[in-house]
Length: 384
Ligand SMILES: *Cc1c(COP(=O)(O)O)cnc(C)c1O
Image 1 (cartoon, rainbow, N blue to C red):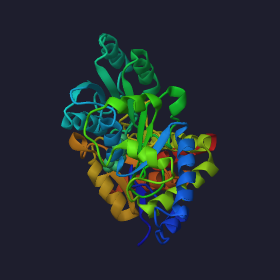
Image 2 (image 1 turned 60 degrees about the vertical axis):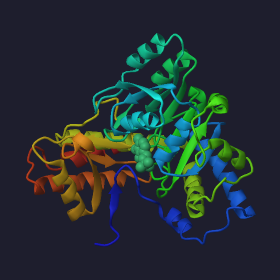
Image 3 (image 1 turned 135 degrees about the vertical axis):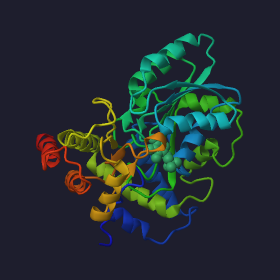
Image 4 (image 1 turned 90 degrees about the vertical axis):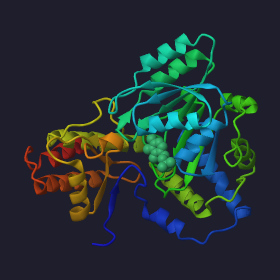
């Protein structure tokens, strides 16, 4: 059936009708008064969403572009950076600074496990001559569905004193509490196709005072992603280069929707969606990939035994028009991932779990009691 597609991948995420309608408008000039007015409200609402007084800058880029900007603007060739690697995105944030000639040191954890803050503390404490200039952490590791303990890691970075903390919050911002000012996070990057409920194309970087100090002496080359340019123009409610005007209009609408829902409700909803999904998987005797207490409110990874996860994904798509994400790299065929990020409701989870039960029957998996997944999810929804 046409137009019944349900995206349950961790980006692009579903887009609300109000936002689709906003996208359908004619573009207008980005040097116009109309754009300036829109940008002023967008900037104010982005600061609200980021819980910060820092600059929050909009780039025409995917999340990776936002991270690249968040790294290259504040560092110089040869600088030592410490990167937390426990999945595909953590690994990317080790490769990126390497490509720019930085000296990369890693703290790793097995895929599916959280980073150990103690290992990060030990590396930082051993760095008595303060050579580590930045610590790069992926808050919600989308490839494995693990939420890293950013609050604790950040405390160790603060105790170090010199290093900036640079955060990939691409699937955590707008899904889980991330109080930038309260925690003192220097650089936080995110992307439009995740919790923002708009299509791909915009990247966001929040930059604090300590990072702007580092910017003054940072020597890596920069041009299109020179955040100083974006900061200067944002003060005049404009952008240095042509922004995707239609996406900015969509963002304006989506941020108003988020404000109307409220931060507490947004975080509560994502928590509930995660709890219901995790309980449903337990009800179906499907092993969860991330341990309890470290599940990401954006995405749940499931590691079924005795059944190919790619087969599950293909039946879910063909029979029920529900798109799940697969495993990346060595996890391909071993896990499937249910995205519950952005414009997702309790009903979507019930539909997905019921369809998954029907799919399991179809692929011949018999290790579950029919209805047990839906019942477990419904129990969570009844309680919260
Ligand atoms: C989606 C995502 C990104 C950004 O990926 P792009 O394809 O560049 O938008 C970065 N980090 C995480 C954790 C993500 O989920």
